[in-house]
Length: 125
Image 1: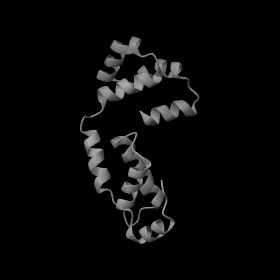
Image 2: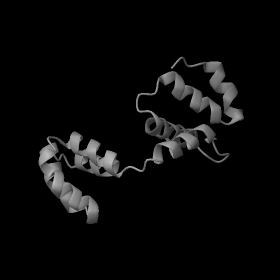
Image 3: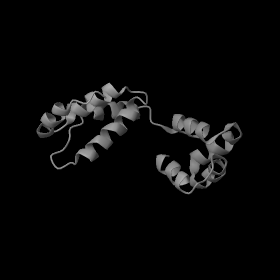
């Protein structure tokens, strides 16, 4: 859904156009679900919310939470890759997570060789 939304945004497709186009990307049960509910979608945002609520795995949040708790920066992993992955997991676990909590998660798995440098700078948020 994120990739599709980004593609629509890059192509400058309006929300109304996106709602008209989306059925071409759906197959099987999701397409049937869309056809049965399309009159209730007043906006692209509402469609996305309902679609994700209907088709997201109930355990996906738990899996993301477990990954976030155990996420460690790999030896050969660039800081930006680690940061991006942790931020994505934070958003999945709690879209309104505080910056302080995000920093805690980042610190927790950061390579020890980088931790000294980070603590020297001591970002507040």
